[in-house]
Length: 298
Image (cartoon, rainbow, N blue to C red; front, side):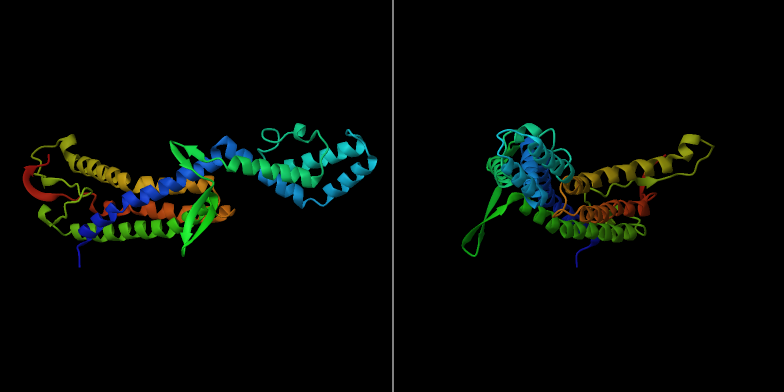
């Protein structure tokens, strides 16, 4: 069985692939939710869905059609106003006025024609690959399943990756916490630096604190200063490994609800955030730890 120090070092090596995966999810999520063309596409798609679901709109169109007017009269204005109200109150709030305006419906069209045009416009935008930070991301991912080619919407694939990465991050952060907790607990009872596994996080003072012959304010608090500096160094080194993948993943949760449910994002983000913070706690067990050596530390 490997020592906690060896196991902890192996866990740190997993930082690279996990960071790569979370970074890819974050960049794609950021692109699909912040690039103007993608937002416009989502607005068109959302508007077509809420208009299609309206029961009142076909009735107003039928009334307008019976009037046999080529321009908007009273019935036409009622029809146009109903379209505007549906999109304003039921589509995402940023859609009306910026991406969809009343001028888009100046020419009288049936509800089916309007929804079809909105869907076609959304499809035209989505058919163009998304380019962000030099990375070109297609709208659909081509997967091979038992010899058959399957196309999956990239947005759905990214959400599936968000779900898959959650237990992986929890397992990784939890293993780091418990392994480091055991490692630091054992170090409390060690006297020689040779008993410490030499991985990058293990930064401890080596020497001794001689008794003070006369009162000196700075030397009196030297152990506290040295311990504070070194635990800060260990926390910074630990952040180099833990912060990037955790930050990328939590940021992706901010931009994209998991299959439309923000409450899942909140719960997942809270649990992962708590595990991330817990990984720093074991360092407090060895806050004032120093290994004996011939050099005076004050």
